[in-house]
Image 1 (cartoon, rainbow, N blue to C red):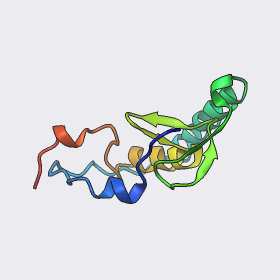
Image 2: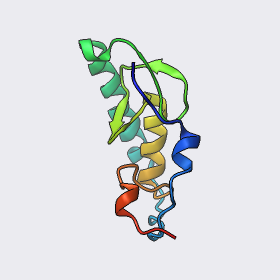
Image 3: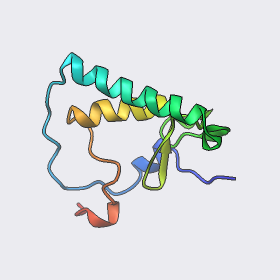
Length: 107
């Protein structure tokens, strides 16, 4: 059985004092490329044994198909949450999930 942290548990971690990421407007082509890449992850996983099964997404907390899920360090996001995360991260609206809290400055 996998252990997981829900989005609300992640929010309880100390916040970084690093500057906010620089915001940028994504072109339609960039958005399409992100969606296409995430679909490719899902489609590739469907043909592999690793893609079988269900897990609890660390972002939305729901039981989701493993196919297309993405591991970010210790966190695993379902394909939908990973797609949303990649869009907002690329647009500079959210920090990188791989930034380890212990490596960030604290308030």
